[in-house]
Image 1 (cartoon, helix red, strand yellow):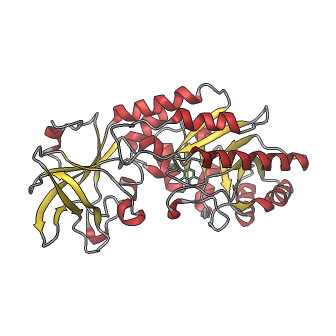
Image 2 (cartoon, helix red, strand yellow):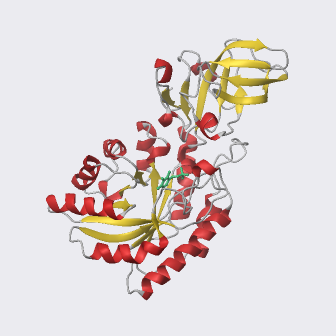
Amino acid sequence: MKGIFPTDRFQKLRTPFYYYDTELLRQTLKAISAEVSKHDSWHVHYAVKANANPSLLRIIREAGLGADCVSGGEIEACVRAGFPSSKIVFAGVGKSDWEINLGLDSDIFCFNVESIPELEVINELARQKGKVARVAFRLNPNVGAHTHANITTGLAENKFGIAMRDMVPVMEHAVKLDSVRVVGLHFHIGSQILDMSDFEALCNRVNELQDELERHRMSVDHINVGGGLGIDYEHPNRAPVPDFKGYFSTYAKKLKLRPHQTLHFELGRAVVAQCGTLLTRTLYIKRGAVKQFAIVDAGFTDLIRPALYQAYHKIENISSDEPMEAYDVVGPICESTDVFAKHIDLNRTHRGDLLAIRSAGAYGEIMASQYNCRPLPKGYTSEEL
Ligand SMILES: *Cc1c(COP(=O)(O)O)cnc(C)c1O
């Protein structure tokens, strides 16, 4: 065993595969609960899109978190994992009729609605069932996040949410519909956010919008501030549990809730990223004129973040103690973007060595594809190995 991984137990498994340290996941969940339990009216919904591995979902549900779903499939996965429907919210810019019907039949806590046409469809489908759907409006707060351009969601130019200036007219419109009831306002400004001033800016914007609602004699039961807390991809061992204290205290200090209101969070990445690792085996070392390549058996079909967002993942050779050398770590897929890292130092690497691609628990396994007819990677927890 080298480092923190049970390498002996890895030997019999077909690579590539995901490995989840459930002890770290439980520690992370405990750290979240420690902060959230200080406030009676605070709730955390896990953003299922980060990772829907059934073993992880069960642990997250047992910790008492609710679920933030963005598709009918995710609602089904959460119901299967035992999440009470009263803790499921359903967001997403393009909900299909069958997905809305599933949400209505499951009696979920809330639909996060992104447009008037969507509101009208939900109203109509709920009316057909003789139900009243609880809805929250997702507003686009036009708050920038200091993160990768592909993962900002709260700018006016993004496709998400309802423009702020439409908030009051949309609320007034909703009042006229019999089969929806507006219970909340929803926001989400982006992902992998490490600068707390971005969340502060969101708080200030929410405060302004609440004041504006009040001037129109309107109010909502809950505020949902979304997720987006980032993690330390550079140093997965230094800070395996994200700084939840700093994150939640920003909201405690800056957000002005009304006395009857509850506050909802939707954390994804910060919950599961550090507990997951992609294990891949070195197939070949190819020495070129100016560099050497470690060609591994995982590709962007298994972990697409480097190809999609130029994301950095720390990579370690967990089979070798030999001196460090520089490598480009590349996959087998017939695309030039199938590169996990360029010019990184690894212990001298040989065919057969296992490489650990760290911090891969979020937006990893769940984004895997079968391009090139490759099998989907399996996920194993530390408990089952
Ligand atoms: C993706 C998403 C989240 C979770 O984002 P993280 O950065 O993983 O915390 C939360 N809410 C909504 C609406 C989302 O789309």
